[in-house]
Image (tube, rainbow, N blue to C red; front, side):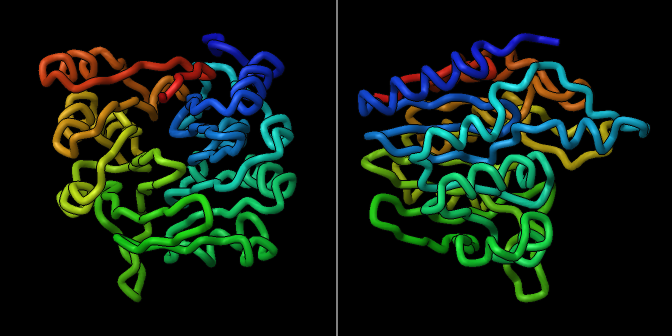
Length: 282
């Protein structure tokens, strides 16, 4: 198993330094999870910090064997105490993990959880119906505004733009406008023209895009591959793109090499992170 770039106490110490200094800094938590701090506040995007999937699939024909160790326990991350927003882009466990989300939300009582409105009943069943009052429920091109941030839903296709019976999307990405920074986290998605069209209305500073691709033999819904993610970042004019959704499970990963090559060809600025590694954003 690969070692995280930094983990546990070292990771928390790095986060606490950034909080104390008021820095704008981002860390990859693994899979599609990110932590971002600015001016002493924090948001957590689609965090997965347990081994719930490894346990669930341990004795099946689709084992979720880790390739990289966990960065930090959710209880430890929750202890930073300044998390304002947590996101879940859809209902798959690596994006909606009760073992991760409960500690984060319980220890940060002012934090809100952004979800697709179509998924509210499922979210309540998985996390507990106590979460209802904490939810921000979104759909495509719908925006919720709080004091320090605005968050807009952007439809994703995983692999299709699935909707509930009322027409609301079950898979979303999010544009977060927060203290002068605009972040796009696609969640899991293939190339999706309605998303591209909607994103052109924003000036994206940081795009967080999956690169593990779409391989039917994995028997899971696919995502962008590396070159597609590079081209999407270029198409939406992202200032910088950071790849994710790889290097966690043996059966569902990819090399970032083709992503890097396409970014270089397109002259698209990018940055590769290791699990637990941080990047200053300004």
